[in-house]
Image (cartoon, rainbow, N blue to C red; front, side, top):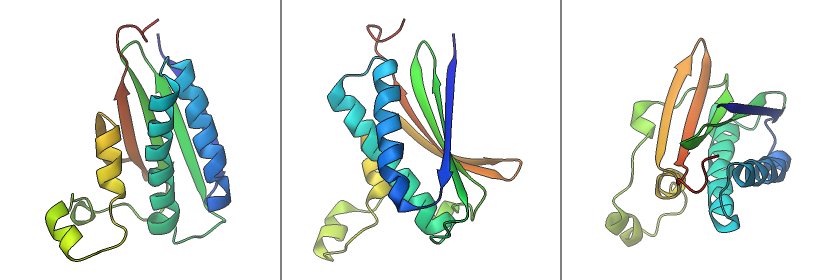
Length: 143
C-alpha cells in the first residue's frame, strides 16, 4: 500500500506555514505522534527554506513541490524544484566544536534535518532536483 499526496506552492517564505501544516497532517495520517510530527515539519521547513534561498534565490515566480509518500514502513517527503541543484561540496556536516568556537550563525539546517530524519538525500531526475527526507514508521504506525 502506497499513499501519495502532493502540494505545490510559490517559492515564497509566506508559504512555510502551509508547508509545515500539511507536513504535520501527513505525519498524523502516517501514525506519528504530535512531537515527532512537529520535528519532521521542522526538517521540511528547513528543506523548503533552503530551496527558496539557495535554489531559487528568493524568486517568488518559481514553484516548490512537496510530495508525501506513505508506505507500510516509512514516510518519504520529497522537496522538489527546478532551480539550482545543490552540489556535493555544499552538503557537509560542520564540526560542531569548530562551529561553536567561531560563533558562526546559520548553516546548521542539514545537521538539524539529519538529526530528525532517518535519512536525508539529494538527487535529480529529468531536471527536477529534490531533497528526500525519510522517517521510518514503527510497527505500531504501520496499517
